[in-house]
Length: 221
Ligand code: 5RP
Picture: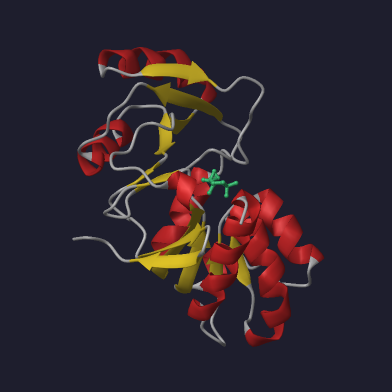
């Protein structure tokens, strides 16, 4: 199976975790798009979804799935989202689609985070994929200088504005051996809105699409 088929297989396998009668959270990206398409057949089983981006909201609505306000939805049953990288502990790098701030909010509200990826996303140590950081525009240069001091090479994702009106710095050259500590440290820089590290709130279940089918992983600790 090719990469898209692997993403689709992982996405469809996530339907097994759907809780009838309960609101779920939906992430952003090409893998999640397969999930949203598959979810359409189950739209009568759920009150609706809380979405992590304008793009996913539009796709959900187009398929007749109600999009609910996060402030009114209460706790969510599951959160289904893709990732740019996943380590063996199910800690993630996300934000390749510039949506990770809202993704973090929706993931935090969910009892179970089901992450769906193809096997190209699996790494022993996070950091091969440049780490996305959402930054308030006036703090872009300040935060970039701080990131250089911390050993990274930040690159402004020019031309991209997030759904929240902010900018993205992609930090190259990191070998993230302690993602929880780095997430905490970067979150403290003034001007940083959200770091694309999902280490404190990592995935609970990782469904990996592989050439011969899907594999389901739980954290190794
Ligand atoms: C968006 C994300 C996505 O989950 C991540 O970029 C993976 O995308 P795809 O499923 O298209 O490979 O974090 O901000």
